[in-house]
Structures are given as structure tokens and as C-alpha cells.
Length: 308
Ligand code: NAD
Image (cartoon, rainbow, N blue to C red; front, side):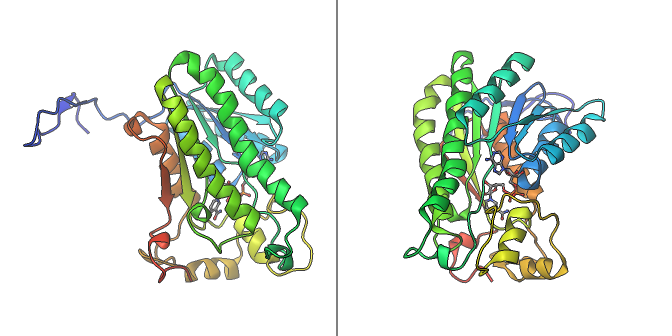
């Protein structure tokens, strides 16, 4: 790593005066971040990475036991500050309390990662457009779309007066293609891209960047739940339950997926891969990126030859 600032090599087509600061290992030093759905899965991986990079992180989730345990275990390291806040993202009251309490504790909010989401029912017949359950549809929309919109709304309210901020949300490869999940899920993830673009248009003038990430399959509780219940007659919870780690058979199933990077056996997508994308979008390195849907899928969505 260079000890002193240095200038990049001038490109032949014009003078670029960018000066790189000395490389700092902690890319979010001094930042305050909220991660919704941070108690496990992709959110947990992001909480860990943001904290390592110097952010003070608030985990917002409904899984109180997991959330508290994660915050306690991470905060046992001297240089890390992680707290847990109970918050159902589909409730405006909860989101308001989350953001107000974060700002009163830390004085500001730099980053919100609207990551909480549910998959919806995997019951075979409810997956069909001719027989979907409107109530279940509402439930998915309430968490995945309204939850993200509320996170944007209340984060923007405290970010606008400060003239900067960073809003990131988790969409899915189901935001750019069909046939990967229930209709409610696909519709909700497409909606997150729309919200991201609209909010980016509106908030850019206040120095707020708005982006989303679209992961392919990460073997979290959500996916394991879907595998275990696909085609069953009835299922409660719609991805909200804690199924822990995938078993051997499920890992094998995961490995059968084919991406343009090859068989996932050799290149399994992990929560930390999504966390790295979130770190990029949260850090100043992406200062000119807004309204973007960063697809992290090993190239699955670029070819009909991919997916197992
Ligand atoms: P997960 O089920 O392991 O984690 C989701 C977290 O969100 C859990 O901690 C859960 O308690 C929390 N949550 C659910 N409903 C909530 C609510 N109303 N309020 C607050 N928290 C709530 O699943 P994951 O795979 O880590 O999912 C994270 C995000 O990534 C979701 O938005 C999901 O749609 C998206 N995603 C996942 C995959 C994948 O393959 N795992 C692929 C594409 C997108």
C-alpha cells in the first residue's frame, strides 16, 4: 500500500487530477449504518463487513434472539460497535423509531441498507397466476416494497438536511427476469428497482445516492426454506423462519447451478459477495454511482444457458 498520496497516471485524452488518498483498510470509518434484515443471511454478512470497515452498525430485524446475539458477539471486539433494534420494516412507526433512535444515539445516519425481505409462499398452486393468494401477495408487498420505501422515506428525511447519504436496497435477479419465484416476489423485486431509480432522481441534488443490489442464489435460510417446501400443500412463514445452514443435499443442489463463471461448485455465491457489493455502494469509491441495480449473479442473467 502506498504511504503517501499519489496521482494516477494521466490518460492521453485529458488531464485527470484525481489524487488517491493513502489506502485505508477501513472504508467506512466514522460512518453510521443501518442494516435491515441484518440478523442473519446476506444482512448478517453485511453487518460484519461494514463493522470491520469502521462503521457503527445498527441491526434492524424481527429476529430478536439472533439480532441481539450477533450484536453482542461482534461488539466484544474493541474496535467494533454493533447494536440491535427490533423493527418490522413494514411498519412506519417501527421505521421512524429505528431512524430517530439511531440519529439520537449517533447524531447522524450515513447509510441505510434496506435488505429485509421475504420470499412468499412456495406452495405449488399459490405460485400460479391463476390461483395466487391476494393476502399472501399483500404480505410480500408490505415487507419487500413498502418496507424498502419506508426505509428510503425516513432515511432521506434525516439525510437531506446534512446534504449526503447513501441508500442501498436488496432486490434480486428476480428484478430483471421472471420464473424464479412467486409472482408477488418477482413483482416486489422489480418494484425495488423502480423505487431506486425514482428516489435516485429525486435525492441526487441533496448529495444522496440510491442504488440496489440483485443477488443470484445465496444459500441462506430463505433459499433453504424454499427448497424444503417447494410444492408442498401448505406452508407458513413465507421465508421468515430460521432454517439455519443448508444440509449436504442442499449444498449439492446449489452446486448444480451453472453461471457464466462455471459450475457453482467452484464458484459458490456467498453472503459475503453481496456484502462486498454493498460495501462498494456504501463507500465513497462509488461516489458517482446512483440509480444503479448492481447484479451479482456470476452472469446468470446474461445467458439462457445459465441456471441449473
Ligand atoms: P434470510 O431469510 O436469511 O434473511 C432475511 C432477514 O430479514 C431475516 O433476518 C429476517 O428476520 C428479516 N426480516 C424478514 N421480514 C422482516 C421484517 N418485516 N422486518 C424486519 N426484518 C425482517 O434471507 P436472505 O437471503 O439473507 O435475504 C436478504 C435479502 O436478499 C432479501 O431481500 C431477499 O429477497 C434478497 N435475496 C436473497 C437471495 C438469496 O438467494 N438468498 C437472492 C436474491 C435476493
